[in-house]
Image (cartoon, rainbow, N blue to C red; front, side, top):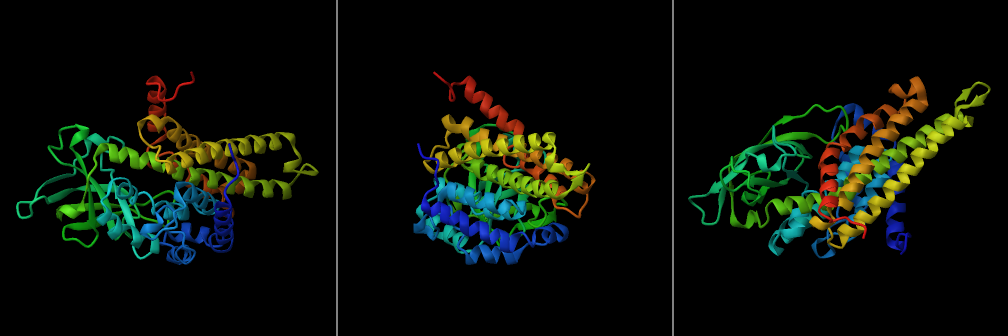
Length: 389
């Protein structure tokens, strides 16, 4: 058992840490205030070869895997959850292709993400059917003019990076949408400039501003056979299972950033002839938060190691879901504590604490709510996927 990162991963961590301190920290508040897409930071990621961390070398990436991406996102999110999301979007939509795509699909779509020449988005959620995947209404029907092709229609919502995406991975029913069978769900790649694709609405969000979430509408979009990825509901779950540590990393980094800022504040803030940090009660709260951060890190790094070994199928779900559940809830808890440590100042826009607090809440919702994760963990224990003898 080895808890040390390899030299390569330590080097990656150092590079991303410096980039985050030099480029992201000074920009984080302005990105939140304006909500404008931070193209300048995307260009920095591109220059530093950080957009292909999880993509295999044969497709233009660096092959650092889920663990490498997790480490990079943790560093970035100490200052900006938005920029953590930007890196996350190099893996979420490419995951189904890496898991089940043909070599032609991998050659066509993965190198552009790794080089930064293209961006992509993952289209699963729908109005009224977020976590209820089997209730999706988007569907494909056979294309009468193209053997093996389809026509795709439906609306997807809350799609992160949807406005910037050059292509989409889209899940849709292959039969009657009223049929809740998991076997009647297909996966399709849609180019953003295809006829019938529109992006009519951008969401107004309480946090994670700077990367839009949007509605994506598909109106009889023609799907060629080469755009079909062979995998249904199981591909959805495997793709999301592999992402659990990547989302968890955003929670860890956010909590670290909030606690570091709050700790420096209480060390400098005088109160009752001392500093706030001199009070034992404050030290205890800092200690509890630090302990929870480290516990989340251990869960998350193990899950990332598992995902890189291909251990993201059903029997591995409890351990993967634990890291996402624990880290995201911990981020809310720690950021809330840090607002309290600053007192009235923590509630003001003069300090980044209110941004940390707003941004943390998103993590308990996206890519499987905390309640979904608890359900998956609980079922895993009941079915003995996780058992102790």
